[in-house]
Image (cartoon, rainbow, N blue to C red):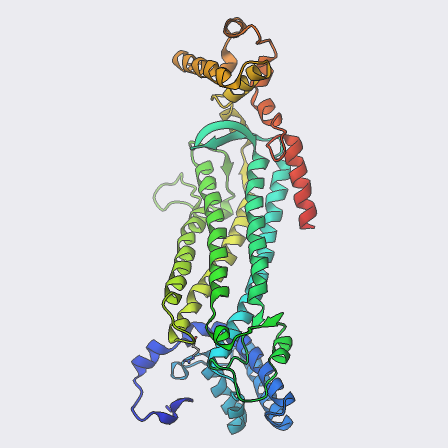
Length: 457
Ligand code: ARG
């Protein structure tokens, strides 16, 4: 089969070599954007008098028929036509004959593919932002139900101080807020048109780049034609933002997986988001959380992959750039499904408030309370810390907790200690008294939730 670029070639094509060079297996995802880009380009060619109005109309109606066929699943792409651009141009030739050859005036596949990628990613990032927003809403709704739910807060995975479960959820809300912000801010750089940069150097034809950018809904254009065709920073930025987002989801999943274990029993996932074992009848596994955690790996990989593709590339276009696509598509798909799973999983999970609370009663997570109590009475904090540390050691040796120590013994330690020490040692009180700005006290958490709700509305 003769190639659209075959003029200077005499040797025969080898099917297996064509297959190696082809991207149609994956870049067909760009088909609607490729047609959209061509429609804008041909309008501009007509408007600027580069082709006749009549040719413009013929090409436009041909492209629209291809658009319909695409929507109805009537197009069959071929490897011989290499990529989405040449496939669609071939369809156009079949639709309208030789005038189809005028579409590619003042254009190269280099600016064409970059335009497609910008259009695609802009669309996808806007959809992903909505999904992050939904997850943030789910988190706030769940948090609202658990402001008073006490759980152990951890450092080093050791019980540290009692916190509100809502406060824990709202920490993830904050991370996701930054993720959404990062993606929104990146739109500014995705929303640029490379169309008209042509192969690398611009074109001799009197094109109007601002006009095509406007028709395509872009906020601006690439100012340098070499940069326009070879820049993939916008994809790298998307992959970086995605890697950070997935890292957040993965940390959350890790916690959910721990919380589902027999050792914690802090939450139970709904059956819909759990799976069983083919051999052990009792099992209820948090597979979906594990998969989100696992899929984080491929997103990190896609980022590293593209950075590596780009690091040694001379300007301008090189075929290496065709390797920018699968990682981007895969990341869009991975993020989209992972965000849906997280929203559903968190929305439907049961929080075992009793187990969480009990777990703060048989531990020393109230030791800071005792030290704070003493230092509030004038004992320097370092000295109070030492006193409580010794008492904790003695409690461990006796198999009791701070709340089990008798008032006499407390008063032997310091006459400043009074009956109200037992209230101070209560885990709910300990949580609730941390009322410093951004702390876990219910007043602070309620304020954080109110602010989140206002931000989301
Ligand atoms: N399929 C190619 C890609 O994805 C399109 C651009 C081809 N340009 C070229 N000069 N071979 O990068």
